[in-house]
Length: 247
Image (cartoon, rainbow, N blue to C red; front, side, top):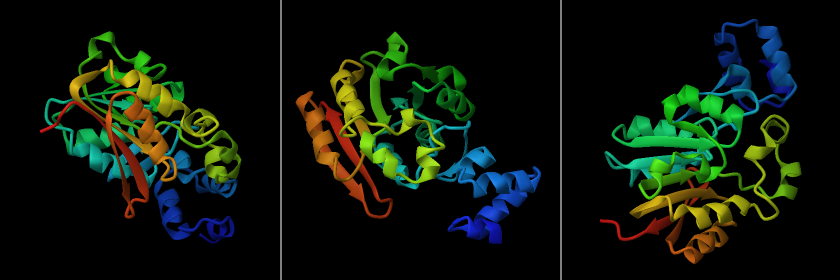
């Protein structure tokens, strides 16, 4: 525990307990943590909304704030709804939605092969697809999706250098870099989503609090009704884009 404290681990006691419970030789795990590797990648899993989410090396570690995206998505995750976890990473959002709204039909997609491998450990593997945004999905989903949940990369390229080393060194840049203003993928998703979604549907996308109004404007320009929502409890911000009227 003292070594973890010296390495700057804020929750050294909790981390020590998890490393001791891992069952592998302790010393190599401590050395990796002292070097700054994320605890979740050392353990091979991350806790998210009470679930253990399996992680491959380099895959984005689900953040607590993304729990707010799940909370708001649950409002629309009705039984039988076709739901897509886009830019799914390890599939944490989709896994949480399946656990908390088990009647949905969930699909997921990501461009990163390591993320897809992780997601196939956390979600029904036959419904996890590798590829670029909506293009990864089966054509049979076009026009049928009732709910899209997205945690696309939204860190501006130049800001990556200021991120904690656990993220900028140990998570794939593909999972962090949102382009010059952080909204590159938001633009592409806003432009493409409409043809994949059902006439009455909703898309929720996580954003930085300072970016949310600009992200919302992108979806409004593409025919969505939009609102932004922020949670102080989660320190999370979500843009909610709606097609058609919802009951």
